[in-house]
Amino acid sequence: MDPVVVPIDGVLDLHTFAPGELKGLMQDYIDACLESNIYDLRIIHGKGSGTMRSRVHALLEKDFRVQRFKGAPADAGGWGATLVKLKRT
Image (cartoon, rainbow, N blue to C red):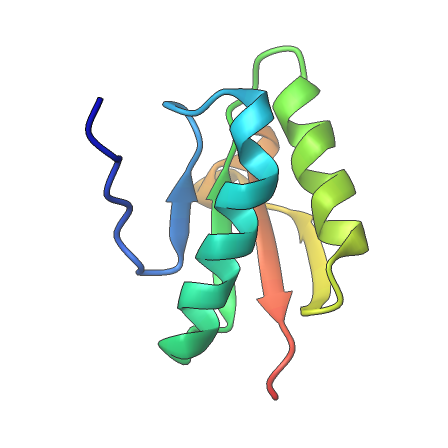
């Protein structure tokens, strides 16, 4: 299978990824965003049962590069997305 190419634009849509892929994917995506001087992210995890949302939040809580995160407002995905502010280094 060919690798999935994810654009580095500050929006990460997780709909095509399995929960087991999240840790490495999010670490790599945050690395790429920081390299591109992108500090405001929107992670789209979907609404569903909340499992992906919980996993995303758990990973963000442990990442020292994350300044803060919060649920997105309705016009940015609401319950199905999380807004992330990365620390500037």
